[in-house]
Image (cartoon, rainbow, N blue to C red; front, side):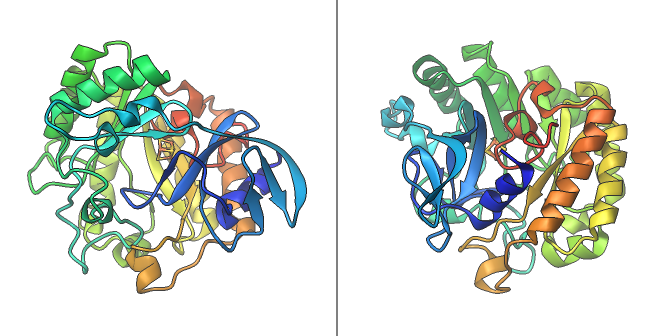
Length: 351
Ligand code: SF4
C-alpha cells in the first residue's frame, strides 16, 4: 500500500465497526483496529468516510481500493472477570494485533477544562463506565497472563494520567510493571508518563522490569504546547530533553520514544528538524496525525478538523527517511507504540 493511501485512511477513517475498537481514553482513540497489508492499523471510525470496511476489504465508492484488510477478532480474555468482579476488558484492552494496553490511572491532575490537553478524553471512558479509575497491579498481572495465554498477546503498553506527585504517576506504573513481570516474565512492557520531576524514577521503572519508555511531548513548539496542552506545557521542553537523555542512558538508544502530533499548527519543517534531533539523541519520534473525536475540547469546543493529508505525508516520509539513515526502526523497540505502529504511518514508510 502506498503511504498516501495509508494517510488517507488515517485521516478520513472508515465506515463500519471492526470487532476490536476503542471509544474515548488516553491519546488517539475512537478507532477500529485492523491489519492492512499485514501491518496493524488503528483507523478512526467515521460514519461520513468515503471508505467502507466490509469485513475484509476497504471499498471507496463501492470499488475495492486494492489493500488487503483483515479485522482483528474480539479477544477471548474480554469475556473473563476478576475474582472481585471486574471485567478484564475494563482493566486492559487489545490494541492492534497483539498489544495489551492499559491506562493504570484513568484520571489526570490536568483534566480541568483550562488545563487539559485539548485532544485527550482520558476521563470520558471512566465516566462511560467502560473502565475503572485505578488498575491494581495484581489485576493487571491476572489479565496479562490470560491475554498472553488465550490471545497470543506479545507486548504490553502501560500509560497513566498524571498525578500530583513528583513522580507524576511513574511509581504506580513501576508497581504495575513489577506485578505483571512476576506473572508473565516473557512479556515486554513499555511504560508511558510525563517527565518525572525526580529523574531517578526512570531507573526505578527500568529496575521494575520495564523494557521501553515513552515520554510524550506531542509538539516541540512552545506556542502550540501552551494552546493545546496548557497543563502539560508547564513542564518545559528542557525538562523533556533531560528526561529523554536520562531515559536513553537507562533504557538504551531506540528504546525511548515520544509522540509528535501533526495538525496542531506546528510548522512542518520545524517538526521534521526537531524529529531528526530526537532521533539523533536515540529517541524515536512517533509521528501521528491529530485525530479529532467527540468528547475532546478540540472537537466539542474548537471544532478542530483533521490535518492536511499532504502535510502528514511529507512529515511522515521525511522523518522515516532520517530514521532509516540512522538505523532506527519502530519494530526494533522491545515494546510500545513505535513497536506496534498502528497509530502512525511510519512503518508503511519503511521506519
Ligand atoms: S500505536 Fe500505541 S496507542 Fe496506537 S494502537 Fe498501537 S499501542 Fe495502541
